[in-house]
Each structure stands twice: as structure tokens, then as C-alpha cells.
Image: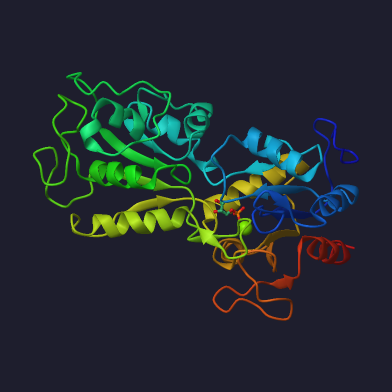
Length: 348
Ligand code: G3P
Ligand code: MG
């Protein structure tokens, strides 16, 4: 257990240095911890440096992600109030869409995440599998059915889908690509009267105008998993959506995005740090990341007191002494332990 892990409630941490840690490619690579990661976190604890995690990953609740990280690192003391996932900023959308029907896109646990945010899952917040269960012809291929009931497509008052929320990497890209492109075109909704949905049929507006909001929580085109070469991320799924929308839409889909590098994510991380430290008077917030397009770009754009530290254990593999051309980091370190030691030296 981290020394001092059971922080007294309301204890103020006077440190004006704080650290935000990316996870994939910094703390972990796939299902294994980066060597020295747990010890690096212990060093931050021992020096009373407040730290939180900010990942473009997710797909589970913040609590579950924190538990997974503890078990992977073999430590305790990391809980949900230190965990910012790609979709954490979706939480307020449950209120925004309370009276509207939304489509949840993601993995098998996405329904549980949405429910924990307050969405009316299964009724006003539905999944593509529920629609396909009701109208199998919508997607004439085998699907991994979810446990939720089919959507009632015949109810005269069935509300149309007004927004698609991409929480996480879709379990079934083909089905979700079909369902989302459909939903971007449907005006009189597939769910009222069960009118057949499909491109160019009477079930669509045919004007090429995007008629549902599209929200996506992770712009990563690539990320560092356990394989040595970076893998496609949810940003690649959105690129595919744009490609499939092209023949039907007058202009590219308008996507409301969160996740790194967007300011909303860095503002949320700073809020978590402030709650943890019980103050917001930071002199330096170090963002330790592996992806220049996400971690470095976001910290550099956030400006003071943020400083980007790029490590070479993930997407960026240039090595110390080099830097990313497009998004140069304030500092480049070999790995997380080296980054933490240099922060401790700098913070005296
Ligand atoms: O899906 C996870 C991936 O997009 C990157 O995660 O922790 O490097 O921001 P992370
Ligand atoms: Mg990363």
C-alpha cells in the first residue's frame, strides 16, 4: 500500500507541484506495467506530490479502471477520484439528453458506464444491438447481442435518435458504422412506426444534412498497446465514419470531441488535482505522456502551469535527446521513473 495512502479527509497538500499521468505507453503497455512504474508512483507519494491519471482509454467506470490499474501494478491507494477517462466529460450529457433518445457506442461495459453517469440505459439511451435485435434487417450479419431488450420500434411515440455518443472503441465496428451513418441521416426516425431504415429510402432525409449530434470521447488515431507497433484508436473509427458518410453527406460530419488534447480534458484533470490537494495554487503541473498528438499537444496548449514531459515507452519512440517535430515536448525522458526523478529534482 502507498505510504500515506489513506489520506485524511480534507487534508490539504501544500505541494505546488502536481503530476498528471497518461496510462497507456507510460504506466502500462497492454496488460503489463512499464518497469519501475509502481516505484515511480511510490516516489511521488513519499514526496507528497499529488498525482492523477488521465487516459484516452476507458470503456469501464472510473472505479473499475482504478481497480484494474491497482491490480496490474500490484499496489493499492489508487481510486476513482484520481481517474479521468476519455468519456468522463460525458457525465453532464446525461442531463442534456434526459428527454432525448441517444445511441451509445462502445464496448460491452459501456451501458454500465452510461448508467453510472445517469443515462436511462435501455430506454432513452439505447445501443445498436438493441435496434438490430428489433430490426435484424438493419444489419444482416451475425452480431454479438447485448443483454438489453430490443428497442420498441413500433411504438408510435418512439423518439428518434438525436445524438450518437461514442464512449469507447466499438466492439463491432461494422455494425456501429452502419448504425451511426444511418442515424446521421434519419429524420423521421427508424423507431417510430418501424419504417425501414436505410440509405436513400423513405426512412432518411436524403438531403445529406447531418440530423443527429455526434460526440466522440477519444481522438487517438494510434495508441500504444502491448504490441511493439502502435495500434488504431477510436480516432480511427471516427475517420472511417467520415469516409462512409462522404457519399451521403454534403459536408463532413460535425463531431463534438473530448479526450486529450482537448482543453476540456486538461481542465477536468486540474479540477481533480485541486480536489485532491485541496487547493488550486499550482506552480507546475507536469503532464507525463507518450503521445505527442494527445499528451504533449494538450499540455502545451493548456499553457502555464502545465509542462509536457514526453517519454519514449509508447507512441513516441525517438529516444532522449530527440523530440517530436510537430508537437515538441517541454522535456523528453526515457521512461516514467526517469521523468518522476527529474520532476522531484526540479521541485526541490
Ligand atoms: O484506448 C486507449 C488509447 O486511446 C490511449 O490511451 O492512456 O495513452 O491516453 P492513453
Ligand atoms: Mg498514452
